[in-house]
Amino acid sequence: MKENNTFLIWSNEHRRWWGPGRHGYATRVADAGRYSESEALEICTNAMLGRRGDHPLPEMPVPLKLVNFAVERFKALYPGYGPEPLP
Image (tube, rainbow, N blue to C red; front, side, top):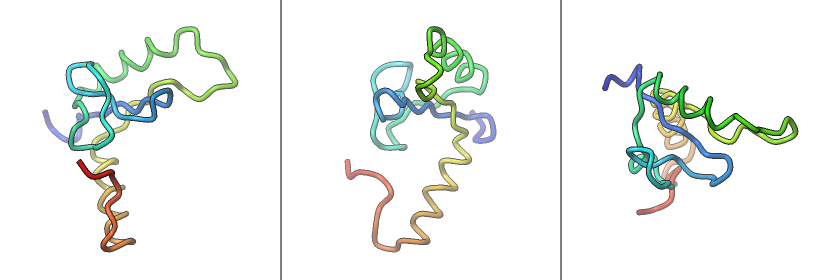
């Protein structure tokens, strides 16, 4: 799967990334599931059914390219600190 079309899914409810194959959750980007754009949008659209307007979206698709940029930016701004929990 090309990075430009690869998405991770952030769960606001669980405060974690969706795991691979739509199973479980991961605290680290490296352990998160990779989804195509269409699959990520399908998952997140289904999660919005029954959503209350005063709560954040339950699940959010996030392009892998954006996640990788944020991780690298964090590392550059805060040398010696990791942006993610240790394994």
